[in-house]
Length: 144
Image 1 (cartoon, helix red, strand yellow):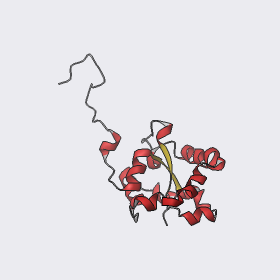
Image 2: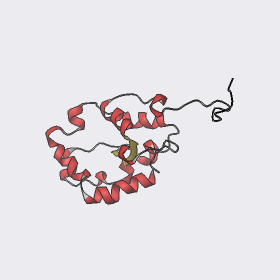
Image 3: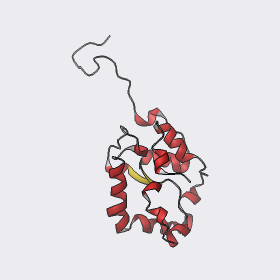
Image 4: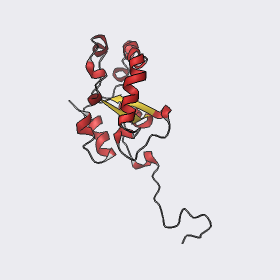
């Protein structure tokens, strides 16, 4: 079983993504619970999730993608709180404590969540990292 404590011990966002991706079978119906989707939506719409669990995880991770310092998620609407170890419909019926366990939750950018859920690779282009050059911040100075 994967844990948040192990996850944050990994030094790069790519390693963290691969750790989360390991062992996931990418089947859209399975990931979204198919006809049993109402079971997970009850959790995400609950007052406890919205007012206590989700805000606590976002605060703990400083609103950073996969809890990686410096990878701040730019807008609240793009923040997802992801279950590290996927839940099953039975988890919701049994009120599984893993649904709320901070060791099973991590803050994630919506794009990263899509890649993880439906399959894909995380790349530096996903973060729009621009290589800086000397004086590139000075608009009136000619850069050679």
